[in-house]
Amino acid sequence: MRIISGKARGTKLYTLEGNNTRPTLDRVKESLFNIIQSKLEGKVFLDLFSGSGAVGLEAVSRNAKKAILCDNNKEAISIIKKNASKTHLEELVDIYNTTFEKLIKNILDEKIDIIYIDPPYATNYTIEAIKLLIKYDLIADDGIVILETDDEQKIMKQLQNINIKIINKRKYGRAHLIFLQKN
Image (cartoon, rainbow, N blue to C red; front, side):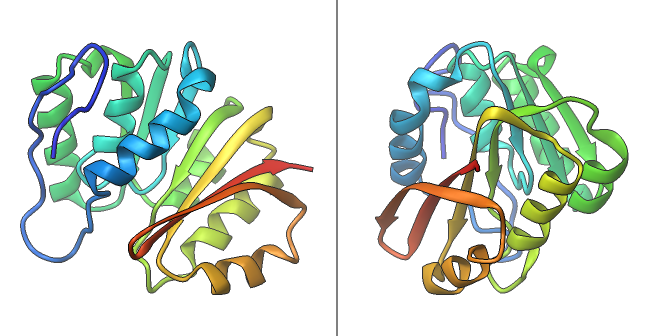
């Protein structure tokens, strides 16, 4: 896993050992950033289930104003800090070792331009996170929410009851990216 483009291009990243996290594949990450690149410069990027921090670090490497990286796993936070240091992007990231609920309810105090949600696949965290972000009015007016899932049908069904619109969908092998905006 590496930073694909920008200031830290080519930097190899540390990853977590074991099967507790599932890193976003470089080809999925590259496609994601090709889609959002024109909307990224000077924006605040939230990587809600950060794992190694690769997605958020890619965002600041490509000129996002800052990235907020959140994970509740202490080992993940340690890897994120090592990766931020290795890429020399630590000044551009805020790192939180907490749950997504606590981050949204108690810590975030600004509207977020681009939100990336890639929780463990077998959870309902995606929909819970979207509902909280809407409830606490944390999505910028022209903000984008990007979901990564392996069960597009389940997510699409759950999204029907939420006041948010689907603006794009992409499939990369098992991974689906769903792009959303506020109604």
